Image 1 (cartoon, one colour):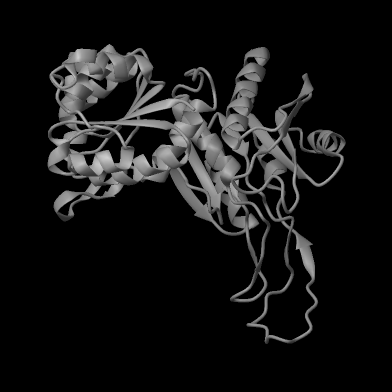
Image 2 (tube, rainbow, N blue to C red; image 1 turned 180 degrees about the vertical axis):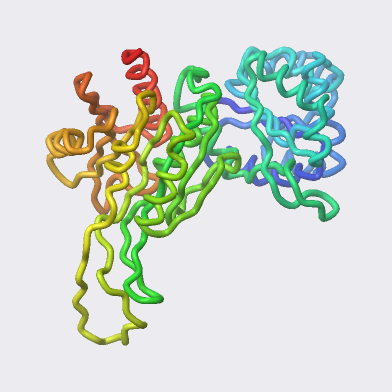
Length: 396
C-alpha cells in the first residue's frame, strides 16, 4: 500500500490528528508521523509512538546517521499536513528546514496536502492568503478550512476538517495516478443522496442511495480545482466541508433547488437518486396494524427539467441505476433525457449502493460506451470527470 506521512503542526486541532492517524492505518496505508516540536505541546511523543508503532522525531538532528528527513521524503507517496498552522505554511513557502517536518517537505518530490487550521483572522490575513497561493502554484493541495467552533469558544472559518473528510480526500488522491487541474475555477453543481416522500408525518418512502457516489465526485472535483455546490438529499456519506451545501428532502425540493442554482454553474452532475413517485394524498399518522393502500403520482423529472433549461455552454450529466439490461436501458434513457453524458450502473440489494465497489458505464451520443470493470467509487468519480473533460474538449 502507499506510504503516507502525516505532518502535525502545533495547533489546538492537533488532537484531531490522532483520529486521522488511526483512520489512515485502518485504511491500509503505511503511516509515518512527523510532528513539529510545537505539536508535541498538544499531543506528546508517547501517544504518536503508540499509534504509529514507530519512533517519533521532531528534530532534524535526530537519526542523523541516516539523514532521516531525506529518507522519509524519498519514500513518501503523499504528505498530509494536518493541522497546518499559519506559521507552518509560511515556513513551507520560505523553504525553511529547521525541523524534521519542514526539512522533509523541502526534500520530497511527493505531492503535499495542507489542511490549514487557525483563527479566522489569521486565515483571512493577506500574508496567509499569499502563502496559500504560493503553495498552490508549486503544485501542493491546500484545502480550505471548515467553519465552526474554534479555540476559546470563537466561531468562524479556520477549523480543521473532520478526520473522515480528510481520509476521503486521501483516498480520492490515490484513486488516480495523476490529478489534473482540469476543473480549475469551474463551478460545478452536484446532487447526491436519495430523496424522500412523506406517507404520513412519521413515515416516508425512499430508496437505498447513500450519496457515496456523489460524495466521491465532490472530493475528486475539489482535488481537480472546482468550486463545488452540493444539493444533498438524505445522504449518509461523508460530505466535503468546503462545498456549498444545500439540503433538501423531496423530489419537488430537489427540482426547485437545482433549477434555482443551474444558471450559475457550467457543469451539473445529477448523481442523486430522485424518487419517481410521491404520495397523492398525505394523511395523519396511520395506526399500526391497519391495512394500507397508497396511491402514487409521478414526481418532477429533475434531469429532464435541467436539460430543458440548459444554456448552450452547460454540460449536464445524468445517472441511471438499472437492475437489468444496463446498457440497453441506459441508452434508452439517454435518448429520452438528452443529457450530455449518462453514467449507468447495475444496482441490487448487494450492489451499487453504499461504500462497496461499483462498475459504471459511460454513455454519450458522440462516443461509444465505456465500461469501467469493478472499481472503487473514488476511481469511478475520476473516470466520470475524465470523460466530462474529454467530451467538453470535443465540443469546442
